[in-house]
Amino acid sequence: MHILIVEDELGIVQFLKQGLQEEGYQITTADDGLKGFELTQEQQFDLILLDWMLPKINGLDLCKAIRIKNRTTPIIFLTAKDTVQETIEGLKAGANDYIKKPFSFEELVERIKVHFRYQKESEILTLGTIKIDLSKYIVLKNDEQISLTQREFELLHYLISNKGKVCTRNQILKDVWEINFEYDSGVIDVFINAIRKKLNLKIEEDYIKTIRGVGYIAND
Image (cartoon, rainbow, N blue to C red; front, side, top):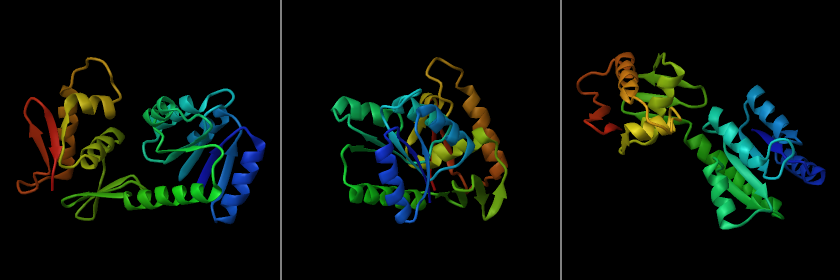
């Protein structure tokens, strides 16, 4: 597993790098937010350890920037900031976890293992005869690969991730399209129809149901 550490305190970086390498992880480091962001655009990491107070781009803004392009890689904040409001800000920015400095290395390792275990369990999502393999970014139906565009993949992933829940058009626009203003939600219907057509869903495979006037729901 490949971990990116974005931290500007050299002593902490060396401590974490040595300890995590001894645990068997591959480690890459960055000492400022800009370098950290550039690395996330060049490489795929399995987990990111992120300091809050960083030069050039602070950790909060870096977390937001990473999440625009990457929805799944776990991000753990390592920071001295510990008020409830700051914790909420970090989680809203897209962080998965939050560890206050100074911290126990053993606790950090266990937190990392939990996120890797959860990530592994969540790599393949299913909806009836449909499978989404997040690690390979592919969709299968009856084990036959289906070619979807990136937006179609993201929309299908969103519906399956919320299986059993009604996803309103406004929610989809906000969470998948990242649009927070008034916008023609009819574009969602176009993408849903394209997904259904590509998946060649039969009558008995009514996995994606339309809730008239509201949105969509995915069910097995």
